[in-house]
Length: 453
Image (cartoon, rainbow, N blue to C red; front, side):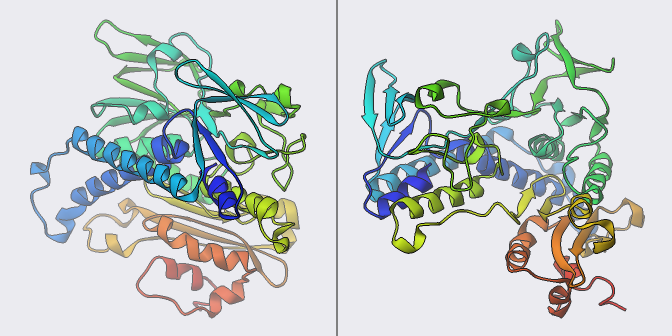
């Protein structure tokens, strides 16, 4: 929303942003940013655990204080809130505090914290309210579990945590907690986490999480109920009959929903589809003229940078010069990183998706699995070293690279450049023609068979 508003204002439009909470949305306050801070903390803990292999001593004397990083993290987020506030002011965007709802297709009512209502009219109204975590039904679930939002409110590090969910939020927070020293159980409804990823990557993640000590409960069909004992600890009862006892924290990361309930979309005639998501076309137009929607409320590609790009293109088209009259964002080849331990990067089609789209006879796959050089000095069995796994999925005689997938140390930082190459239509020959940067993990993508013969 902020990115869209500022871009529109840069063209001279009169713009207001309605917000009922802290500026920056989910990403800044309870998502990407504080999550990455905690990912970094867990990564430092892993480095301390590894330091003996490089000749350093003193691991046992190092202490971690949850309160310190929470205080520093929260101060950082507060500083970002202020930056967003100043950016809106500097861009000439009006900040309207309160809860918004439609009173007509071009009319918005805002209920402020004092209970007063104000009405505004506009020719163009953009819905970018994002999503929120939801809990499944079940006895004691609403009373005894926290969401990913609640994770960032924890004042102390849990001793034993049960994380419920198979998506990126679940594996990210499970990895953070385990890395910092919490006893972690991960509950997945089916056979493994991150099933939407290429099997080569999700299987590797599954192996690595188990090596790290995360106890994975599989094929559970979810949580039936959560009970609280006299000792203050929780027992998680799973739908397959299994139980997990003695948890001080149960974190539910089993799904999110679009934040649309307060908006009174019916008053504007805006259509929704299954799950409450707003129907919007490739130009972010809803079924009502002059009303637009993008980001998580539409449920296409639920990533902050994706929503920012869509919002800026919308503002370009509505308020920019004539050459932007048909501007729209592309939802193809969007690079994505999951900050699990180890991190994952993925762009484009999985192997199964490529076969479904191009036919098995027209798909060729290149893969590699190895231990990063970082683990070279470790005097442990090779199979015990954390693995990096990479896969290129190519289609057609020209071997167009339609999928690139990686898990392992540094995956998060190597992906952006490959994203550019794939958006430009890179082929396997293009990858092969690039001279490797040695020694790095990324070089494996440009030295895969048959180049290395």
